Image (cartoon, rainbow, N blue to C red; front, side, top):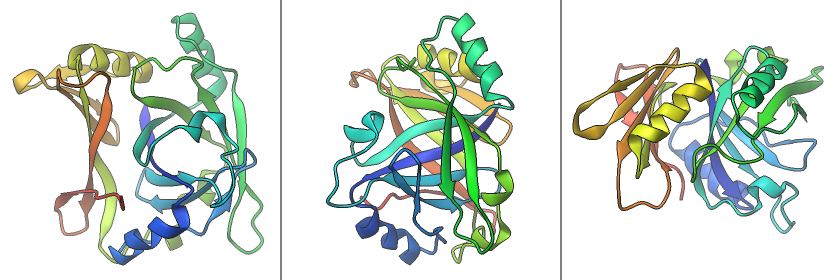
Length: 232
């Protein structure tokens, strides 16, 4: 299964913090409003993206599942071919999942209507500390538009996401079950899950009470791979 996007939680500070990323050479899409009340801007990359997610300043959060999330790297989102089938597979495998939910937002382009997504979310997250869900794109052409994929700094792709967890082996095994992937053991207890468009690395850290998204790296047009630095 492909990785779809990495969520960067901005809470009610999206307008204040997003310009810092623009100053770093990233092209951000215009602010969009979801039918569920949240707002976002995207850093659109070759086969994935980083979603800056939040809600309007001065207003209470409309979505319960993000209301208590802190600023920073927040969620891993995978891309199923069919959200309904993924829901059924997860349910039969014993995961606590909610029914498929339709998400929509206007596209900031002349003559274009709504970007639409079918999402599968967990009633109980399968990895303590991580927020994970699935997003099937019903209108992918509205997301991967060449006009929003050109970044002054040369950013092209999400290359790797590093997760730290007290039980790296267990977290990696769960992520593999969620994505139909295979885990490979690395040195020093690290576990790697190679998806078609990105590598997930789980590193052991017994000082943690739960898993965290530690860092993401991006591939650039000059061939370098560099850490993504959130505007925190």
